[in-house]
Amino acid sequence: MEPTPVCATISAQRAGRPASRHFTIHRIVGGGDLWVSECVIAYDGVPTCSVSIMEFTYGHVVCEAQYFADAFGAPEWRTALAEPMPGRNIGRA
Image (cartoon, rainbow, N blue to C red; front, side):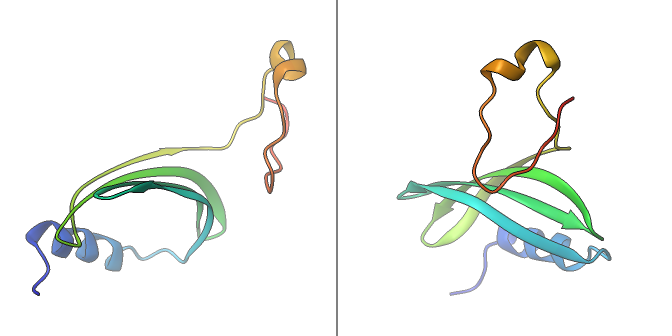
């Protein structure tokens, strides 16, 4: 089966990125045609948190939304409420 135009566009965008990339996947959840992944992507060694929401039809990606943010710690006033997440080392804001 040929890739859909959306799949081809996503593949081309990712292949064209000149930076060295390393992915650390924290979790993937979903079912059927909707999946969400949470990971840290290091571009040339600089980590960025990412959440990706992917919709599939007939085994192909038809829609993807990605959200990116730099890691940040809890501000001092909220530190007592913050809980460390497994596998992560984020300091105070």
